[in-house]
Structures are given as C-alpha cells and as structure tokens.
Length: 105
Image (cartoon, rainbow, N blue to C red; front, side, top):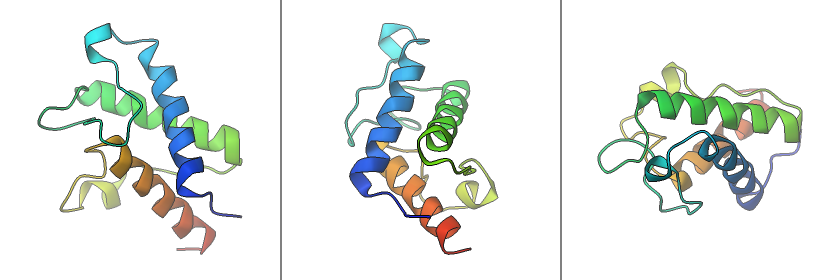
C-alpha cells in the first residue's frame, strides 16, 4: 500500500468534515482548515460529534484508499496530546496510522 501524502490525507479528512457538517447545526460545523479546533477546549464538537467525525474519516479512508484504519482505539486514547485536537493534528494522526499499517506495524 502506498501511503498518501499529507495533502491527500487532508483532502480525505475534509471530505469527512463535509459529510458531518451536513448533519450539524451551523454553530457546530467545522471549518476546513488545519487550525480548526475539533475537540477539547474551544472545540466545535462534543463527544458524539467527535465519534461521528472519526467514523466519517474511517469510511472516507476506506472509500478512497480501500484500506480500513481504526482511529479511536487505545493507542489514540493513551497519547499525551490528543490526536483529535485540531483538523491538522487529526490528519497527521490518520497519516501516521496509515504509515503503520503499510509498514505492518
């Protein structure tokens, strides 16, 4: 499996944001920017919204790359700094998980 570039992963995350935004009230919608705070202090999403976004990203990855990746697992939850804080951090985390999968790790 070829690991997608940062830009390709960000595009996949933006696609998931588009899918999620269709279901959210305007004040909860996410801006498609790496700096957008997703979850935590000043975040737009509550825990249910975060789960919905994660599921949408996992589905978009599967649709575009034909590979399944789990984002909300013990590895994510045990990190000192949340991989779900901003759109950019989340996209980098998705890419890291894809790199691990490609390398068999």
